[in-house]
Image (cartoon, rainbow, N blue to C red; front, side, top):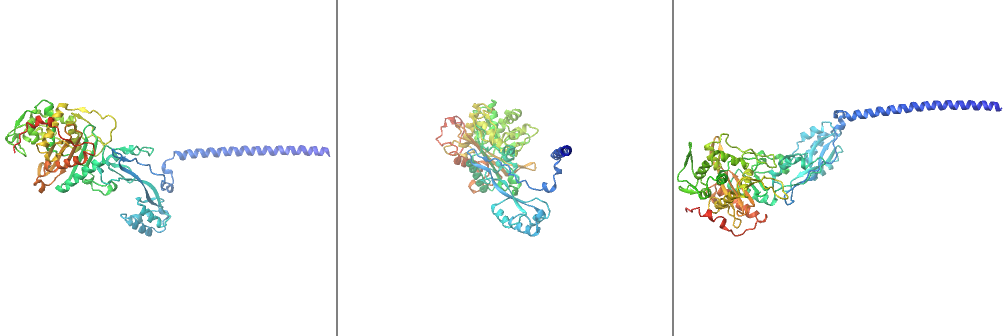
Length: 562
């Protein structure tokens, strides 16, 4: 029995050993198959990761991204007043593959979403696509009404909507964005990358504008446009020592909250994009160039007893004195005859070099893409030298003129114009005329207001200096005497200039209060006066009695004929 038991135990041990060998083999095969499957899966994963986007199934590609839209940074004025910001808005989409009745749904949505044709909605709902936009950026009431339909195939995506709290204020500076929040014009376009960086956390953009000054300038220009039935207007207020633009206005304007429906002429920026022959405002540059080059002094003068013949043209004065005029009288009375002779003595080469040196022969360098190129003759000859001396035959933008005049009154330093608020020590700029010449120009500008054609720009207590400009608009190779560009460039206070103010009216009409006159002295100069009176206290410029010692020498050179 024991022998049999022993034999049975040996048999069982062998059987167990055999079974374990089989199990071990099976485990090895299973492990191999697992590793092979894992490797195949990894290879396929890499292939899918490297495959083209077109490999994504159509149904998946059609689904919307419900991730939050990257925030666009605010735009503020120099005092922190918000000019552009964002609000959350719901955008409506549909899963057209789940729409049971496209006709009824389209009819219901068209009643909620005015301006969206029912036929367009029906076509989208009948497309069968998993994702179609119906309308972007709904109002809260419209969202509530859509939800009330109870249609599970309709959904919303939360997006950022760009809003401009002040509406039309500074529209041409701010610009606007498209439905996806991309800048299309103005600083919204120029600084698009900075406002929406890769992290969706753009830096707040602080502009040089002062919303209070911007409003005052726009308000006064609008009032003048209405009073004089003008086609358009433009204006600039600039800090002469920093180049910062505190206000920039172009009229007609638009509401950037609804820019898509705006006509093109309202989006055109007359202050930077438009270029104009600006008439006698250019005499400031002619006098500055001649004085700085030693061509003449304030004690010199020219014969203005009769028109001046240059080639086949006769140069006349609008307000003829018909006598010899000193340089201060030529400037104050805006004599074309005297200025033309001064320009001829200056010469073509020096005139052109001077205008180029103050940036009038290149497009304005400012933080906008809407910038116009100046127009001037390719052949700059004797006749052009004469006409350009009093602002005909050359066209520049208002922002260019403002920057050039700022250099004439701030001690002779040409400083870049900017729409961005500056901090720290301002740039000294490039010296384009001597401080002595700049002082003489300030004297002449002040006398043009005290005793000359700019008298309606006088703002008591603020010692305004400036120059009128009236130019006929070119038309068909000729000039249209009935279509004027009337302007005034002013600066204050002239004993220590802080700001320049420019106003332009496009085709103003004479009215009863101007005795039928539509020139710059009658139409634009009062705008500058009113803007100064409204904004000087805001800018910290206090009115005070005038110390006329700066002007006494020049005043003595001006004879009152009346």
